[in-house]
Image (cartoon, rainbow, N blue to C red; front, side, top):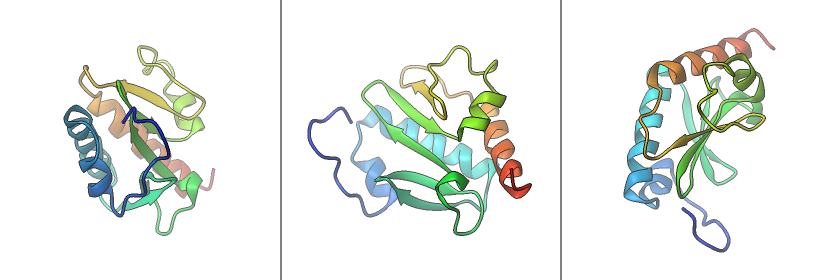
Length: 128
């Protein structure tokens, strides 16, 4: 992205992805596929103008995973408890309270992302 001004409104996740750089498009699609592999029933929605995945039917914001494209990385937002639970495995990546940045020029850690998605889904199903 890295464009100045207000973020446009996208109609679908495909529309969001198509409006990113080619490098970001590839990473977003790869991350999307990994999330869907880990949670095949996840419902795709747009929330806060970015791609989100409801891990339970009609999930609220804290029951969603989110992803977003930036100039040099893909932001992945699996929830603060998930970031905390996997902090050791994520130590090579820049992290926020509930997010991790995956650089566009490095491979996505597929197995780790799958574990994180499954962890968060189980957490939601247990009501924590």
